[in-house]
Image (cartoon, rainbow, N blue to C red; front, side, top):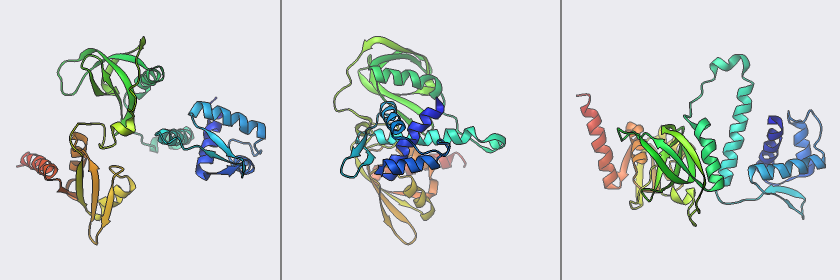
Length: 297
């Protein structure tokens, strides 16, 4: 079964990498892959894999009848990022299966609770039904029991999974970390209607990380030393990121809300960055650094 799924993933990955590709070229690429045993891909096999991949991965593999080239339809709803993540994960999993004698030299990060809680929540997302769980917040001394939410979407951030949904009792959209959950139950029969117009892309579009608020979007400017600027280019803090390159530093511009996660991220870079504006964010960072310095005096 694993090899069959790998075949579907291989097909989607190949078409996406080429953009547009004929069946003849797909067959040649297949013949070179370790999945093929050196044999070309028959037309019937291609269509079998194509149909299965469309159903399993929720993609549309279309054919341009004027050129007889196949391509992945741009769904424009965030699904491509999920496909990339899935393909990358499968590639990593396959590589790790072959580590053999070097397994002691491969270091991985733990992702708490994803294995146990994520499948239940994904099932709830598919069915649009409520979930109930106990929750131990880091800011409360007592564990909350019987928390009931209508799950809207899930997000991974810094190796932790979160579910965002409507808290039925508090009548608010809240975020919960999966690693702090226990007694998770899918409430079969308690269906809900997903609100129109809400999406994870829209919900987080003005924020960094997992925390959100209703603060105004600010024009944030950072002065960044050259080495750190390379990391920002490779992994932008936010899609709004723009850069001005100078001889001995870079200036990065963003349109974001000031959130807890953003402040923590900026503090983590220490002296490699300087907040230029807005003034309130600059004050927050300076005061936090001063409190940290006082710990060592």
